[in-house]
Image 1 (cartoon, one colour):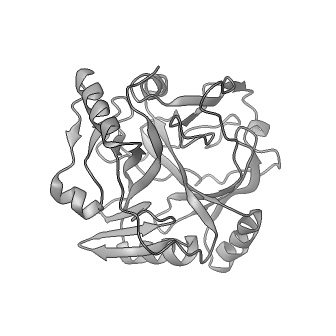
Image 2 (tube, helix red, strand yellow):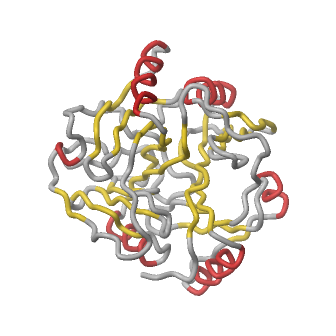
Image 3 (cartoon, rainbow, N blue to C red):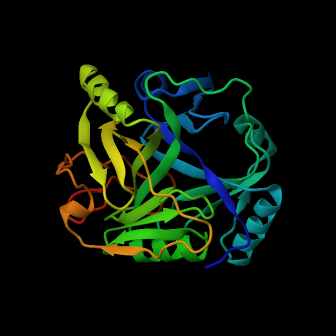
Amino acid sequence: MTVPFRYSKLAYAALNVTDLKRSVAFYRDIVGLDLVEEAGGVAFLRCSRDHHNIVLYQSPARGLKRVAFELESGHDVEAAFAHFAALGMAPERITDAESAQLRQQDGFRVRERHSGLLIELFAGARQLARPFVPTQADIARIGHVVIGSADFPSSLDALVRDFGFRVSDHIEDRIAFLRCHPNPFHHTFAVGPAAGSNFHHVNFMVTDIDDIGRALYRIKKNDIKVVYGPGRHPPSNSVFFYFLDPDGMTVEYSFGMEEFPEDDARQPRWLEPVPESLDTWGAVPDPLFGRSGPLEGALCNAEEPAPRSAAGVAV
């Protein structure tokens, strides 16, 4: 469905962590993000010119606090706010004080009603004068966020109808890969079924396949748990590698991804529910893969098994 606003990109993911200092060190020294600032139980890290692409919040429990998308303009923000208000979804403006803390212009938050995921929409993130300088990996951008929904069909329908996401591919009724149109990347978000709505993983896209190889040995050298890969995802054609952060949340590096034109894009494919639809190299996910905690504020937010893949394992 066409919505009256246009996306620019996935802007950031806000994660709840149980030991902020420990998580800052991990995302800075292992993942390779740049720490911009840390104060008052909140840390901002980036992999671009944006002020932040990951926000870490000190919390009693791990999980996903919210996910934020940048729209193309302030006009899009106002059109989106009116759109969600008309749908009776009670969008809430971000306060001036929090916008200042986030170094963003005006925005709002609205909850996807079936999974309970809190989604932020805004326009105008502060651009830092100093470019992002890669350290551990040549990260190009935050790539995508994946969740499981306790009501997968309704969440998928709402993400397409209400939020205007476009479906790139499905693996039967196991997972749907979505892009925030007109952003070209195969998916900036994905959703699958779960017994209780939960956070699955966050992705960072790297610019060189060697970053995947170097990450494998860096992760092992630091005794960090590898939970899937390396391998290649057939839906997006991405080379992938998944590992756990200090709270056991799943983090992914990926290299390469199909890009879609704004107009006349191909139709979504319905892929067979077999292991080869998730990985052509034969990697087997660890049981801890994707068990990344709840969505903050979701109605069904207990820790639950992750979404199941085509092979009956987490995706």
